[in-house]
Length: 349
Image (cartoon, rainbow, N blue to C red; front, side, top):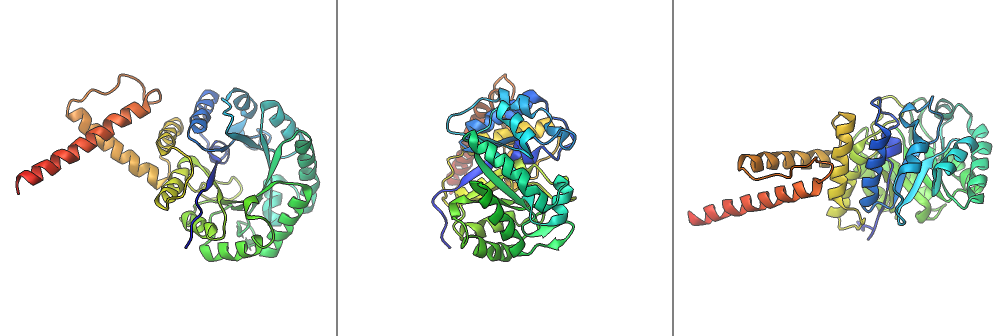
């Protein structure tokens, strides 16, 4: 297997992650969280959705969030827009890129956006035209490219028909979504065999949910087809309101662990990602599903207990203000503990 030298991660946690949460995250906390993500080295953040608040109440403050977040010059800030009204609001709030969306299966499309596939194209076409007039790039999301929660298996030709039409309408990038997280590597191979012969690899983004624990395996498969762009959600947050039981996107934390292990560059600081995950976990008051995040948290908590038991002074500040300083003390403590254990072992020889 050959891995790419570099992969671009698109963080969708603030949108795809929060949209399915019943716990309200305050606007101040959303802004602080997105600012943390902007500092992490991630190059694109989908910060909210401009779908009507009646449908996604968790993101009803999208305009305020967009106005208040810090804008980093090397970060692209995108948002989901359903129609021209949503795009107007998104442009007012400030976006670099618009994300339009539809499904490859008719029933999911009707349930998700209350329109047939055929009736969706003119709406998307108008959004793309207006966005391009404002010099904004457009990503087209295609949901249910493998399975539909209502119809079952989705035919590859049906997926390609939707993709063809979206490119004809003028989208720049295409995000293919395993919306309910049921795909396995052989199905990813079959789809990408068709897709990569039809469209440039650089225009394709893969969007895997991790319902069955297959997201990492599917990403590895996609990388072998030359795909180097992936959506992920901090801590594994998310789900789909119209796909009951679907888990969140592949966790950014787990994806980073994979890519670092394969020596694939991302430019992302995993320490900041860990701290941002801890931050949103506290605000949601729920355990994040990311395995990598939970492992590191357990190690840090154990080390923290050792530090306190040993009488070491910890910073007298909140975790949000000085997370790195606290972690540095713990890392140094662990290093010294291991050295002491090694010295004791050698002294007994």
